[in-house]
Length: 158
Ligand SMILES: C[S@@+](CC[C@H](N)C(=O)[O-])C[C@H]1O[C@@H](n2cnc3c(N)ncnc32)[C@H](O)[C@@H]1O
Image (cartoon, rainbow, N blue to C red):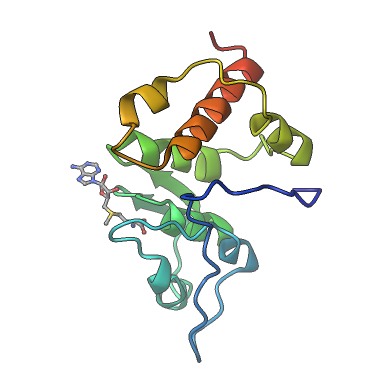
């Protein structure tokens, strides 16, 4: 991102964590260290240095990550300039993999991000209506509806 963003996190949104520093671990490629560390059950994020050290010594061109989850493992291999085939039956994981592993062209800059979090009244209240009392606080649900509406508006999806 080209500019610093002053984003006020809604109260219940978990900020992305800095990757935990562990002594004497092999360094992974710098690009892979910038991958968001998501809270995701079974994420191999902490194993990335070990995976890198072990497989960087092996001669291979392509890798299959059939349970991509957060996408951090597939992204590590992309950072190692390997061809990556990733999949996951969860839509969330599949979308993340398409945005971070498959995508080499689209990069959202600060202006685009500001448009996505723009304070325009939400175009819909689907998330608030369906997830009230289930996930997040009211203000966070509204925030998500707003971002979702802005994405639709920006991508001209009705
Ligand atoms: C432990 S997580 C993967 C962790 C991933 N390596 C990471 O570091 O984030 C397991 C993933 O497998 C996916 N999964 C489970 N069964 C599957 C199946 N039969 N086909 C495709 N994906 C599956 C789940 O949706 C989940 O995202």
